[in-house]
Image (tube, rainbow, N blue to C red; front, side, top):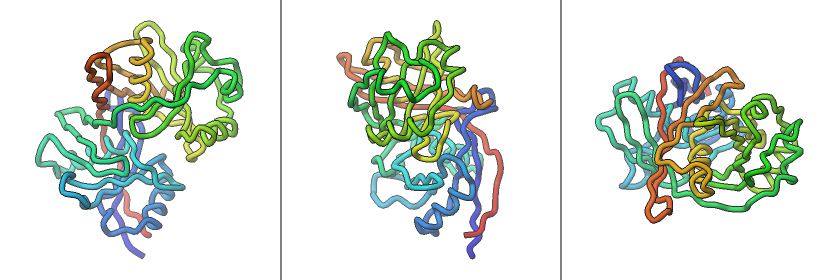
Length: 283
């Protein structure tokens, strides 16, 4: 058996608390996919990131992302967790990096307290009638004002507008139905949100990938910012999303949009993080 050092870091934390935990392994070059999956399963977090040498001349390093059951193309919170670990270990030598992922080469920017990750330009797919999604929750939670839509800035998610914040907080997911819908529309899951005054509060469900509910999601909130902007629900250059309250893991995700002639040209997600623990695993 081989000994592997793995860090656990919390990404998109709010006031140095909460956030979404991810595993970070600096020894990706030494491990095969089966071992990476085994480590991700042992940790049990929604994603674990593995760092390796880049296979192209553009990127500084390669990051691969594994859930407990499979590899995924990219993950926002695991990327923030990765650079949180690299920064805390004083392994960073500059403020701007390029990482190689299965979703392409993505720029990273590091400041004193935030890590920013550029996403792909948004892609908009099917609009989904509320009747199709009504059985995903135990109550009639969906807003009649806005229509759901599949959006991606790297991973496809269903943007699900909910009536109000109270409904969002109380609703209970039907994981079997959410998995069925996710499979039908080939999405990671459902990203439910409510708008209240100036707040945007979210809950994210991805049971198809063995993630019942996630406390902070970078890619899904980039998709949500793009959805809000395109549909004229809330047009801003900087969005702040709140997530994780139902899991007692309050999280804050910042998304920046750059547009030209009302077309979104660039999407960036940012957040802070901290190392939770260092582990020794055997694979």
